[in-house]
Length: 235
Image (cartoon, rainbow, N blue to C red; front, side, top):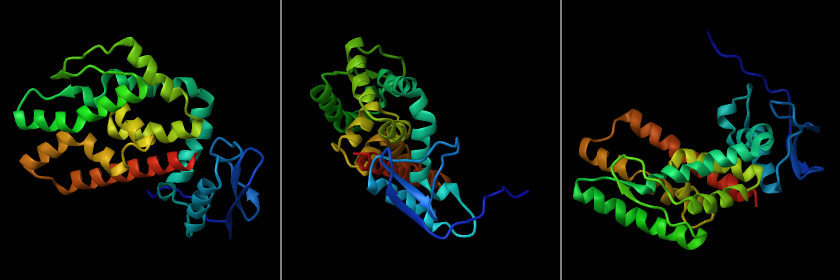
């Protein structure tokens, strides 16, 4: 049974100024989100990306080809109504940040993690005053409460649109620190993605990579690149 997809009904998608910021019109009619909220974004550049996605649709609408639209809809329908809860959930990643959990062996992997991740923890300490504690193995380590509060402040300072993109940076990388470093331009998306995959790259170096794993990795890389670009266009 094939899934239903709406047909294209418009000729021209255009980015335009709106009361709250910028929007996209389809043959002059303003977009609505899935929850029927009036669609808007905070910059013309972002509205133009959304308009291009709608203009590129052919006979049927394919949401999987519209990441800018999808993230903006999430900002309006999901993040805005529950901003504090979303921000708290993302800030909580700092309590179990990927960069803080190190291998016990082999020594080559231990050294590789330290070389890659220690500078990022130094950056977090310098940028936010939050010095996270590192441990070896999988046993949880309790982070200093003041560190959690400082990192949470950086998350709560974002706009709903930024937070929608930031959600993907955190979820894909598994690290609040990496997500903050990408969002603030300290790392490129490719650099941040590579740093999030130290363990996986080690394993693939030992056992190789199958096609399915490679495709999943490419999808995640594309996702983190999109999230970083969306975050940038919110400014």
